[in-house]
View: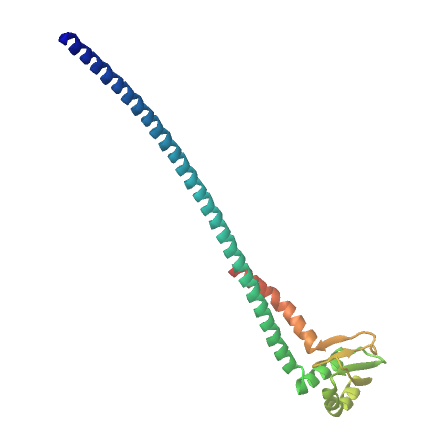
Length: 201
């Protein structure tokens, strides 16, 4: 009886150990599957995070480059505007100085002597009020003798400096006001400045 009991205990023990080993193996297999699944999911998520980070960085880099290009264009446009304004100021100042007093008088005399058409008719020279009296005193008699025709000097409220001259009694005129001459010089210089900005940009 004791022998049978011993055998029974051993059999129960063996079966319990086998069952426990089987159970442990099953748990181990399941844990391995879960661990593998978790690792795969983590790797996939890590790849997605890296891919998204790269994509965000590329977009940020492109956006930064675009912002820098725009800032550079804005700076060049602003600089060009400032340079053009400075050029206008410099040209206007020099033209204004050149188109006053004795220099202007010489220019008017020369234009009437050299360019006035022959024949009858009157040459009309328009100047600002302040220059009118000076020109009348110094030039009118000389101009009439030289041109052999009537020369009319008149004041114009819209002229700040320089003059306008008409050879056909006012039907048309040549504009040598400081504003017109400055605009003409500016229209010649500004495209060259624009070329410089293009080369530098």
